[in-house]
Image 1 (cartoon, rainbow, N blue to C red):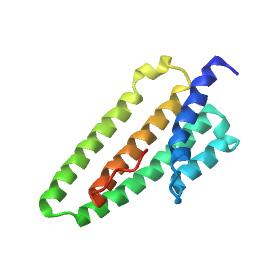
Image 2 (cartoon, helix red, strand yellow):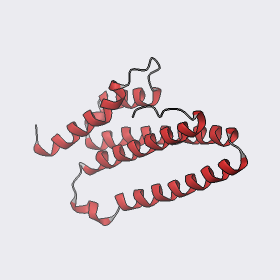
Image 3 (cartoon, rainbow, N blue to C red):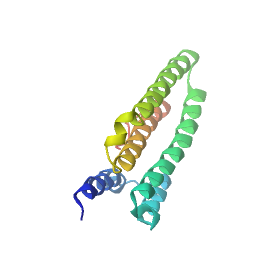
Length: 144
């Protein structure tokens, strides 16, 4: 195996581990679909892996918006405004981070960076979903 491929293998294991370690009886359908994509012929290439992670990110973004709306509906006016402001700031941070990830530095970083960066975006949005879920149920945050 080429040396440049090892980071991708390690990344795939790290991203899949939280899903595999989750012992809930209701598996995450988004993560399952991403695993299916990564296991396909398309997911075997660097560009294919990046595309699989991007699709996973988009699906989690939709889910995050659903969770966010549910949270807002369940909050008192003051909490709703605080959470709304926090979400706006998180979204601004997310967009700034994505812009930085697409900066000129990538020209010399190699092809392997695409899947790595997309997987980081997935991790970030999954983390934000867990934070929002905490507001909704005011309970222990589920593990990643």
